[in-house]
Amino acid sequence: MGYSHYFTTKRSFTNNEWKKIMEKSKEILNNSFIGNAFGENNSKPIIEEDYIGFNGIGEMGYETCSLEKEPEEHWNACKTGNRSYDWFVVAFLKMVRQIAPDAIELRSDGGKEVFA
Image 1 (cartoon, rainbow, N blue to C red):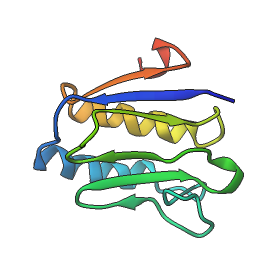
Image 2 (cartoon, helix red, strand yellow):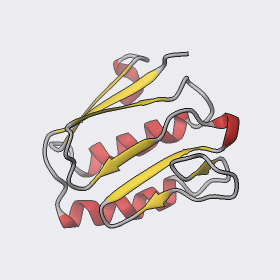
Image 3 (cartoon, helix red, strand yellow):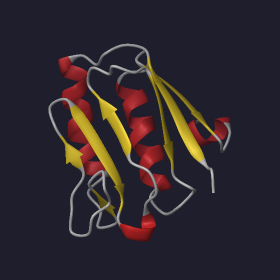
């Protein structure tokens, strides 16, 4: 299934914004269904000083959702196939937009209501 979420970063995140994003990411992504960028069993999301990456574990995931503090590419997408970890991708991206509203723009195959 080709269900995806798209995000464009308009600038790098400030140190203060990134610190908040890292803290909130630990809260949102602290779930047994969410693992590292490869979706490996018994793994945890990658939350680092310059990068955040996660995927659903096993069949729960699809494509890695990742964000860089200082993105080289400004356009990104995460294909979730509307699988179980989709909720976490949406919650993560909404949280980033709440912390840094002028730094990220969100769109979804699910329409505008997904990020409302």
